[in-house]
Image 1 (cartoon, rainbow, N blue to C red):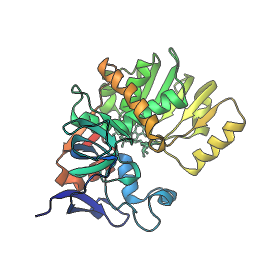
Image 2 (cartoon, protein in one colour; image 1 turned 90 degrees about the vertical axis):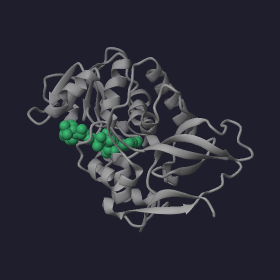
Image 3 (cartoon, protein in one colour; image 1 turned 135 degrees about the horizontal axis):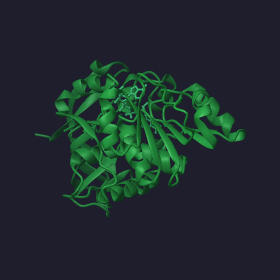
Length: 326
Ligand SMILES: NC(=O)c1ccc[n+]([C@@H]2O[C@H](COP(=O)([O-])OP(=O)(O)OC[C@H]3O[C@@H](n4cnc5c(N)ncnc54)[C@H](OP(=O)(O)O)[C@@H]3O)[C@@H](O)[C@H]2O)c1
């Protein structure tokens, strides 16, 4: 009998119910690939948006009428169980973590992945669950704070949306970079933000975080809950508004402020960077973890069979940090 693996199929854009469990023949790695038995994978806000095909212009990359890849999940961790004949960097038994990007298929029992892709060795001190989350909130926030904003010691940073996957990482990273951090959350998450190192916490349900009488070097709007126009008065001269949630308004400001104005709006698609950039950034994050400057926040863990439930929970917009399936 031919060996099979389990995955989740998406044959059309839509809500969590479009996710269908499938069993397929186990692939054989090509010469440059490794076959990973997945131990944990993330269910991110971005995964939900890609399942729904939102925003619509993202379908240019995902598939115009239906998801081209047809499988769910992007970030995973696991063990190498087979290697292609030319693979030199990984061996059977290695614990690894990585990102499938537009190949998808990380919410599964197995995946074949190029050894030169976004794949790294998982340190023993990092759990499979933690490792599965690193390519989402951690890598994105690290990319935005270090590559886009170039945060310096003693700068003042405002993190809008401090309790999400990006926000919980951003607070810890900004502190590790020596910044003074204000973060917004609803009251139920205030203690979490303080425990991550936030110097000041603003309850966005009762106060406007942008009208606290402070001026910031960087405003990191992790959720796109504000805009460059609204944030501009709260930016210092030369300050930067950075936001990972792309819309036409943000795009307009990114282009406009690149040419004129001392205050800038910036966006990047961190997941679309080259694998060597991913590996460099993730190595820096692993160093921060080894030095106890960063620890991923995991809200809930579901069995892989409950992926639909996990998507429903992420869709509430209330998750704290990351959601993982194992
Ligand atoms: N550009 C890129 O490369 C890239 C990469 C990855 C992700 N992203 C994008 O980044 C965004 C953030 O994703 P995420 O995973 O961090 O989100 P998330 O984890 O789903 O965010 C959930 C958190 O947001 C908080 N929240 C909701 N409304 C808020 C508001 N008005 N002010 C402050 N906090 C609020 C909620 O706290 P309460 O329950 O207390 O309200 C909850 O804890 C998504 O749009 C995602 O697509 C972009």
